[in-house]
Image (cartoon, rainbow, N blue to C red; front, side, top):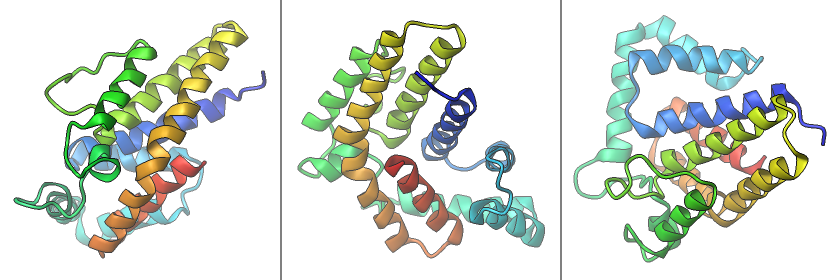
Length: 202
């Protein structure tokens, strides 16, 4: 089996980048690490990298971060009805949290030997948690490749990933990304939605 360590590390960084973004509102540390991570992708001319750099230079780090935080809270945490919901069950179920979709997601986690840290506190089908799960699986594959692990063990984890992507991520992330674009004119969030959608498609 020919798996590139470089590609696996890039995959891990992609999942880490997006899961961290959707886990909590942007911070100074996140914005700085975002520049580093996006830069590490090897394409400093990417629209997202340019968007961050240009705005930091134009507005200053604190002011730009403040504008991102305000838009983040409006999109994902607005009182009452949030414009963009971050739970899969809202898109794939009856529109309510903690439905059959959530249980199915948990079964995937348990099958791979992973117990969610915030079990029963935050529904398992939160976008950040699902992306962290993908990061976890990619990390396991990388470790097995580096250690010369058995090919059947690597294939097993790749099957976990493939099934989770097709049964879950691809079922709702395109709609989520489209909803983000429809509800925000902020270029940063537009680019985040495009990048997230591309990650799932690839």
